[in-house]
Image (tube, rainbow, N blue to C red; front, side):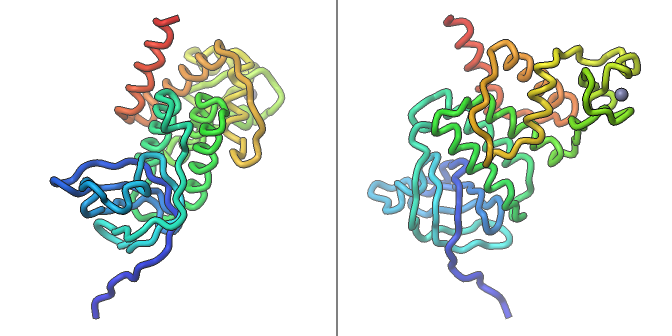
Amino acid sequence: MSVNPKSQMFHGILLYRKNYREHDMLVKFLTAEAGLKMFFVRGANKANFKMAGDILPFSFGTYEGTLRPEGLSYISSGNDVKHFEQISNDIYLDAYATYIMTLIDAAFPEGVKINDWFNRLYYALNMINSGFDAEVVTNIIEIQLLPVFGVAPDFKSCVICHQTNKKFDYSEEYGGIICEDHFNMDPHRMHLDQKTIYYLRLFSAVNLKKIGNIQVNEKTKKKLRSVIDKIYDSSVGLNLKSKKFLDQMNDWKINLK
Ligand SMILES: [Zn+2]
């Protein structure tokens, strides 16, 4: 007996869309019920398509459709769909949000339930949409995704002696922070200042749902960007277009100043 999955309600955050054939679209969602899913949306590129508003970039909400275990899934309607308006209206916020979404898309296989990350993505986008520093939110997501990418740096205590209240530095060789007593163990340690270390440790442990505003000065933000890039380049090795765009955008910003 073949089993046809039934239509069901699901919670989704739209990650991206791409045109498919002449009139159709493929739309990727992170769903609470079944993780990452690609949907085939027939007629999405036709004028007067009835669900046009439900699959705009930065949509999220409750949908009805068929979640297939393999291959493409289907959406039949959007029931309570909202949009992250501020993100859609701002090219900078858009670039940060898009990068976060492509990063999560790259981190997990399709169809695996990742409820925790559904929530984290929702909080992250909500924070960016309501004016929280997009760079800080992005750094938090990047650091917290490292274990998912198989890199689990220890930011809690010195990887050698496990002290927690010392001056620290980051060591790529040891995959975590080392305390000042052990700086001599890694001649290639990153020589980070204590403020940057403080934020790395905070970002690795913070719960996005519970944080208030975090103010990080520009100088420290640059250092955080550079450390996280180093860790991603040497240990994760992604090559995301959305990250390149973000970097280019920040270069223009600097050049315009
Ligand atoms: Zn130590």
